Length: 95
Image (tube, rainbow, N blue to C red):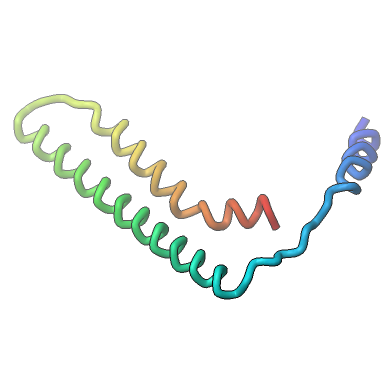
């Protein structure tokens, strides 16, 4: 069964085209600048999200309110993981 799957994957992957990159250097530099700014903004938003969630947790604790802040913190940290792994993930898929 394993050899059959190996043969099928080899046969199916053989015809996948690998186009050459034809992007001009000036465009590549501008796209890299925009992506760098977006990555910086995503990181800053993640840090702000963690700080805001922590402040909300502290205020709720001071007031004596029970709240679902751990789920909010999980969502913020999940977003931080996505921002941090976006570049390596895309290069793994397309390289």
